[in-house]
Each structure stands twice: as C-alpha cells, then as structure tokens.
Image (cartoon, rainbow, N blue to C red; front, side, top):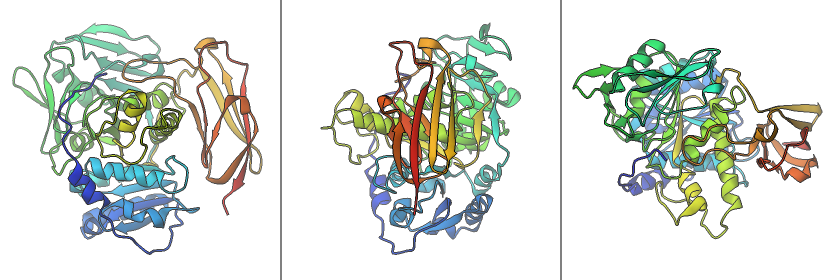
Length: 473
C-alpha cells in the first residue's frame, strides 16, 4: 500500500455542519441532470453563473440548499431521481464531511444500498476556474497516460511512469511498443513538471506520501516535492529550484494512492485546487482522509484503465463504488454499516477496510462530461441488447482463456477480483431474471452486477444474462 499514516484528525465539525440540515417541503425534481448550489454560493453572481451554465449545458435544473446537499434528499428521491447530480461549491464548503454527505445522498434516493446517480463536485480556486471545468464540451479520449507509479502499460496508447521506488528510473511506453526502461535524473520533480508542461498527458496517476498541501512522488528514496502556491501546482526540487506547472490541456487526475490528496480544506492553497487550476484537471478523484485499505481509490483503475474504452471515468468511479457496496454486503453481517465519521476505522480486516473506504473518495468535475480511455486490449467482449421493449440480453464472451477474469494489474492495494458491471440505458422500476441464475447476478434499477467468475477453470464459451425490465410509472 502506497500511503502515509499521519494523524487522522477530527472531522466532527465538518459533520456537524454538513448534517445540521433543515427539512424542506418542496416538489420533487423531474430533471435527469440536477445542479445543487447553496444559498450563499448562489448569491455570489460568478458562482451562480457556473451553476446556470452547467444546467443549461445538460438541459438540467438548478436547486438550492441551505447548507448541505443532504437537505435535498426528499426532493430528489423517488421515481424521478436524477441520473446525474453536480454540486457547484466554493472551496470553503468542502471537506471530508461534505464529501461523505454526497455519497450518502447518492445512496439515499431509494431503498437499495447502491448509489442512484452519477455525481460530481464542480469547484475551483475561483469561479473563473470552475467555469473552465463547466465549459469543457468535447469528450476526452485518453491516449497519453503519465504516472508516479506503474500501471498496465499494455492498456494505453502511450505514456510514461516515474518510479516511486528507485531514483532515476523511468518507464516509457511508445505507440505500438512495449514499456521499456530509460534513465532519468535522481530528482524526479523537474522531469515530472517538464512532462506535464510539454507532453501534455491526458491523464496523470499519483501514489506516494501526500496531504492536502504536498505530494512526495519518491516513496522509496529522497526526492523533491510538489506544493500548491497561490493556486499553482509547483515542483520543489532538492537543489532548491522551483518548477511551476503550466499544463492547461484538459486532463483527468487520479490520486488513487495518496492520503488526503482529494481533500479541499477551507483554503485556496491545496493540491486538488492546484491540479484543477494550473494542471488542467477537468475530472479528478482522490481520498479526503488518510488511505488505508485502498479499494475505493486503486479500484477505479480496474474499471477505467484496465478495461480500456469500456467505461467513462464517471462510470468507473460509480462501478467501483457499486462493487465496494456489494462486497461489503457479502462480508461480516455483524459489522455496522451505518454512517460513520470519515476516517474512522472500526475493527480490522476486509469488511472494516471497505467501510472505511466507502464515503471518503471524491469525484471532482462535471459527471456527465465524457473522459474515456482510447480502445485497447480487452480480455472479454460484451454486449447489451434490448431484443424487444423491456427485455435485455447481456452477453459476455471470454477472450483470454483462464486469464479472462484475472487481475490485469496488481500494483496498489486490493486490486483485481472486481465484479463485472453493465449500466442500463435508463432507470427501471424492477428487473426480473430470465436466464443466467447460475452466475448469481445482482439486478439493480439501472445496472446489473455479475460476481467475478474467477480463474479456477476455463471459462465457458459465453455467459448470457437475460432479464425483463419494468418501466418506472
């Protein structure tokens, strides 16, 4: 596990502020895309414009809350629950408690335990920065991937990673080739800044020690650091030189293995705001507390990068959360599954780890904007077809023998073994299984989950899940 173990701190104040909400008696929303904004942020004209433009972009609706999006649970719940939910928030409104509130709101719109919408938080060091996030329209096809940790290079078109364990070690993947080792400087920080500024990657993945205010890419050796300075991501080399990041091309930032890299405290100088600002991050994920188990962070790569082209980043984030909730339900029934303070650890083992992770990763950006890996090698093909109104067939065809459902990349924590997930084109009132009971699929209202078939034996020629769907009234 690539994570620091600093003091967890106390987020009770965050939770009190977030959960002290007023009951609203308001009509339900009917929009598929809902933008939430607090009354105080709405009164700030530039920030209100961000919310209005986001709603206009997707034909959605802007809804105000007093303090917390959780106030809107009753308004947003039910058969007209939105499929996309964006919270336009100023930095001072955020923190571990508010992020946990978004998770709980997304899971609380109906009776099942799964998240009912794809959500994201749109923010920035200023309204102007947030406006740039909203203005992004063309889908992003991720071809060039950079990282401070290894990844499944066979799944990307091109890229490079800077070793977190050995000084001067860089791995380069060129189009059509295999990753190979090249020599680099002992201090990786200037080289990482040059890469971000000049190569303009579509995605950057980080691991190593970090906090809200710094990132140390060298995990196993003495290296330079990164800090946020007035909203700019800045490299601080060992020789004392500074290297500002100016990489405005649209990209995604995946802080899958860092403590607190996703947390935005009440400050303009934090790492996430700097990535959104000078580093061009249009969508980002990260932890708001110290990492421990790693499932909610590293697992996004299992769906997004290791299955290239199959999921958008927003879908991969949601799929991994569905997998976590499902896995938690399979384990220790005695473990409390009620809401816990972000960062709290109850017991030990897998169930405790999943519970720790459940509400402490965050998705920043417009959840409907599409960022997707360029097509690459897939170990199985799949198709979802609606053979007639309300009757679907999900067909999975193995293409790699016993390795079909094996872990693609084991770097990180709790990688591999993820269930297969397919998203449905719309939400349904109920699903009825017709074929495929032996595979024990889980039928939800807008997705189907298939427990990973494993690698114990050669897979069948195909797996077929057929079901009927009853439309919502």
